[in-house]
Image 1 (cartoon, rainbow, N blue to C red):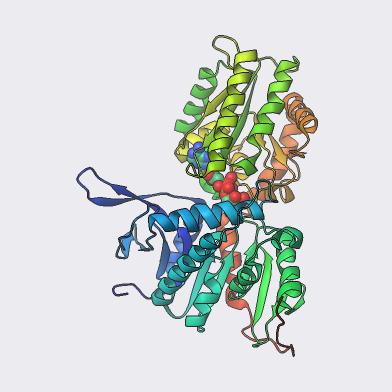
Image 2 (cartoon, rainbow, N blue to C red; image 1 turned 90 degrees about the horizontal axis):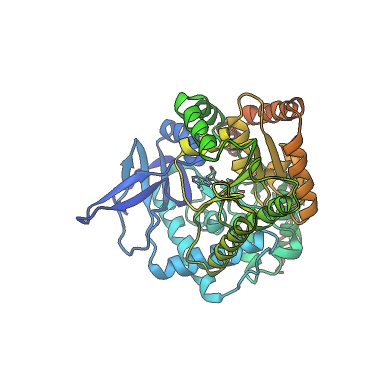
Length: 480
Ligand code: ADQ
C-alpha cells in the first residue's frame, strides 16, 4: 500500500476510534467516537508516531486511504457486506462472544464464518505489516483479531507484538468445543505478551496451551520451541478516572443531574442500570428482581424508581432482537401492573448518550445496579465510582464481572439468584450514609489509583521489557 505512514507504535483494533459519516451530497467525513481506549492511548500514540488500524464501521468494498484526525494517523480496513455478516456478526459475535461468556447463549459453529474470520484477520495483519516501522511495537486488541499476532509475526519477525483480550477467556471445558481451538491458540501465541482482564483467564489460556498445543509452560510464561518466550498475564482495564470526576464535578452536570431527579418526581432513591443491550448483562433478571420488590410492597413507586439505559447493540443479530423484545415486554408488564399516573416503576431508555449525560445519570443515581452473568471487566461500575466524588451512592455488583475483583466493597451478588439480588437491592436501598460512604471511599481509592493510563503504561512497559529469548530446552510441540 502506498502512502501509509511508518509508525513506531501501531494499534490494531476491530473499530477505528472514529465513525464514518456520509453527508447527503455523498461527501464523507469522520466523527470521533471517543472511548476509554483512545483516551488512554492518544498520548502514547502521539509521542511515538503512532497509527491506528481499524474498520470504519460500515459495510463497503471501497478502500479508504489513511488519513489524519486530530493528529492521529488512522488506517481504515474495509469490509464487504458479506464479511460484516460472516466475520463480525457471525464468527465474532455469534461464535466467540457467547463461547467466551460461559455459553450463556449457544455459540454457532459455521465453517464459512471461520473462513471469513481467517481472511479478515489476514487483511488486518497485512495492513499492520505494511504500516509498522522496523522494530516497531504493535498492539492488537480483542477477540475479533486473535489470529493477527501469528499472521503478523510470519511477515514481520522484527516486531514486538502485544495482544489484549477485553472479554473473559473461558475454561478449557468450554473453549474445547471450538472446532478451530488449536488455530486460535496458535494465533495468539504469535504475540510476545498476551494480556487478560483477570489472572484466572490468563491461567485458563496457559493451561490450554500446555494441554492442546503441548508447549512447556511455567506460571505465566510459555516456552516456544524456537526459543521465544510468550507471557500471558492479567492487566485489569480501567477508565479515565480524572476525566469522569472532572465532568461529574462540573456545574453543567450538577444541574443536569438535578433536572433528571426532578423529572423523575424527586423519589427518595433512584436505581440505575446502564448497559449495552446484551444477554450477558443480566438486564432481564435485574428488572424482574426490582419488579418483584414493587409487587410485594417492599418498594413503593413514589419512593423508588428504576432507570434502565440500554444502548442499542448488534441489532442485526437474531438473539439481540429477541432479547430486546423480552426486556421491553417485561418493562411494559411491570409498569402496567404497578405503575401509577406520573410514576412508572421503570424508566427504560433505548439510546446512546454523550459522556456528559452519562455523568449526569451517574450523579443522579443513588444505587447503581450492575449485574452481568459474565463480563470481562465492566467499565460502567468504575465510571459510577469515579463520578461519586462526595463518597456517596451504592454499587450493587455481580461477582461475575471482572470489576468485582477490585471493587470488593460493593454489594456483591450472584445474578442467577433473584432472591439474593432482591435482598442486596433492599440492603443498598436501606443502607445508612455512614455505611455507603465507607464502601464508596474504599472503591474510589482503587479506581483513582488504577486508571486507564496506568493500564496502558503497565502493558506497554511489560511488552518492552520482556526478554527475546529463553534458555529452556524444549521439545517440538505435538498435535492435538
Ligand atoms: P462492553 O461490553 O461494551 O465492553 P463496558 O465495560 O460496561 O461493556 O463498557 C461500556 C461502555 O459504553 C462504558 O464506557 C459506558 O459508559 C458506555 N455506554 C454504555 N451505555 C451507553 C449509552 N447508552 N450511551 C453512551 N455510552 C454508553 C467490553 C467488555 C467489558 C470490558 C470493556 C473494556 O465486554 O467487560 O470492561 O470491553 O475492556
